[in-house]
Image (cartoon, rainbow, N blue to C red; front, side, top):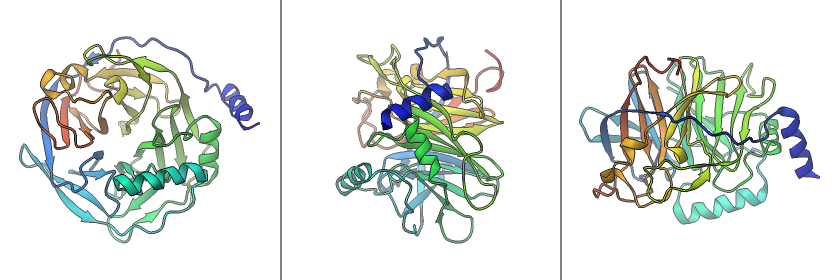
Length: 331
């Protein structure tokens, strides 16, 4: 009954997957790369620009986030301790929560922080993949979990999202006013969700699910032993009124409409990130963090403590130049 109900919702909402052959994406130009020292848990899994400061999180650290000192070529992560209150009930099923808890006992990171974003006031918002919850870390005062209507998770699961272990929310973006959040569901199916805060409760304004998409695409030709892999989102950012999704399986970032989530244009970073000296002996894309600026983009890697071909084992953040004409130019 549940699967039939979910299928009905998908068909009625127009969110059922279609197979689309994407046009080749223009290649971005690498400007610089920056190893990051000082992250206790490694595994850089999100980036945010708050004013002029870059912040990051690790999916292995529950009790601290990091401010990045970018004054030298090698960046230094400066620890900022946070006192996280108990996680509220989100509506995820017991079986999924149990698997996540068991995994955390082995690898660390019960909260599994997978994305960070900021509003114009400097408040930081961090998404917990393990609990499908969002933590607000204000400029002053104690962190607190956002009050999110339980219907959000129910609608997402009915649309085929948030069904699989370690494939839940992988990124978030917050508007400057701090009253709208977009959440990126990672894979199998991948999707984009929007919630708003008219008062104190974050809820859907119309449909929560903007996009639910299944299917596979070929990895770029530069990838050793390229194969068809699940479409994914590994982060999402809001810039100049548009959503930008980081799609690590295809080594690209894409500009999307913030209301419909429709793709407008994509850019590839495969040429630079898959240069022989930068390759990892891992069968998938490792980019998990995205910050957009007018003159470029920051893309951070969660390398799972694995070494690049040149021996580098630290997390790395790459700086790519904006394309000619800027991020809003038409193809």
